[in-house]
Amino acid sequence: MNGKRWKYWEEYYLKKNWGKITVEEITTHLGRSKKAVEKKCNELKLIRRSNYWSPEDEEYMQKYYHKLSVPNIALKLGRTEKAVRTHASNMGVAKSIGLNWIIKKQRELKAGKVI
Image (cartoon, rainbow, N blue to C red):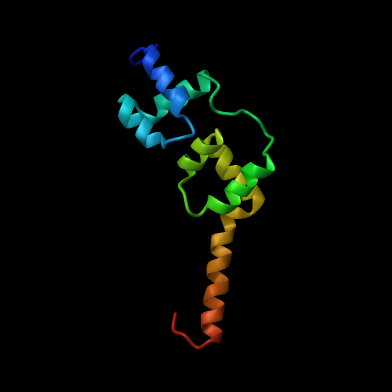
């Protein structure tokens, strides 16, 4: 075992706050690294290991993917950051900001605005 052993109160804090506050707040409060916190969450089964995405999860992704950080979305949905990025790409959400930018710039060109 590497690092320091997890205390009961730390596990309790993690269980009570996972998905409610940011990973950064948890790591700061516990004085642990992000990697240590995510590993413990996996051990405690706080991070979902499923390919199924509920309609609510997908709606959340659609609404917040370009407003919140991937780590915070992963925290809220109980998923890994990789799962969030992959699913956003599969949904087409990850690309939408680029497409929106292109459409906006095309409209500006047509309106005669300088880019």
